[in-house]
Image (tube, rainbow, N blue to C red; front, side, top):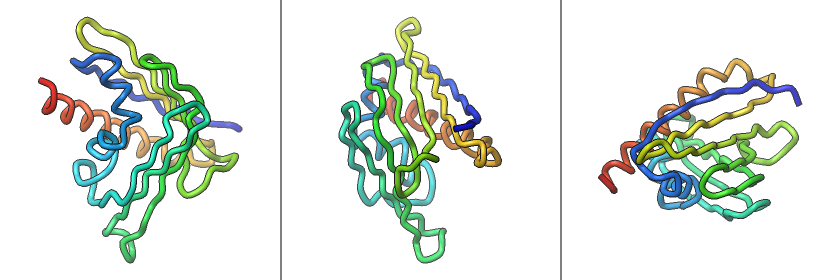
Length: 152
């Protein structure tokens, strides 16, 4: 599959373990990845099976869409190496050969961490690269905010 890479980096004053776990815990995912902190949407269900080969489903309703469209973000965990690497597929609705792939690298940085998130999207979705970059940047900034509120 030909793809284009979208990369976002963010530093955090939190441990690699805390950051890594925020990507796998349904309660945390609902605080920074989806919901009213991010955009006008309602979280309907967040399900994760956080093991290699396990699947996730993040179902949200966006009222701004016609008839309050439900969007199901789905994927499969490809690599879970706590706390330094997480890799998963990413799609809307169903897994298929056109699913994109997200890889998260977490490195210790002084008393905190740095996250590098790389999202490989199929080349036919290249027009969405900047929107994808902006969405992940917003989500990581929101993660920083909610972690700071909870732990600093």
